[in-house]
Length: 146
Image (cartoon, rainbow, N blue to C red; front, side, top):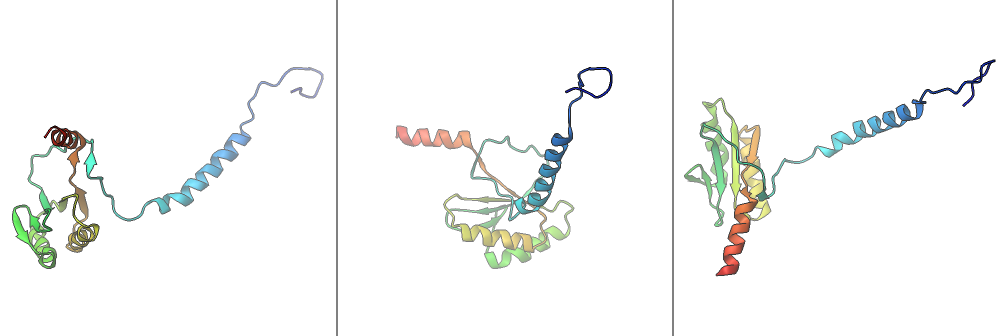
């Protein structure tokens, strides 16, 4: 590009205006769509390759077994009494995190009902306990052998 005047030199500047325009459009798109992406509950899939959490304190674990029995750690409770018992347990605790471990054959509605009771008891952080994918592969290979 030639500049006006007596000297015929090339202009070696990059025109960044189109770049800035594109970046502003992308920023607006992300600002509009970001709130739409946050919906529902954070749920981990039953098979995961994540490393296990290392902790020295005992966590509160809600378990739903294959027979749809519900346990708070090792004590069996009903769905109706789960919220009240959790509220009483969490009253004296500073750590209000709860972990949910459910058999993968449980109907989705049962898991959602238990999660609603847990959230209704005032639990702010609900984690899902999954089985590492490597253990699932070992079990599958043992089933094939037998």
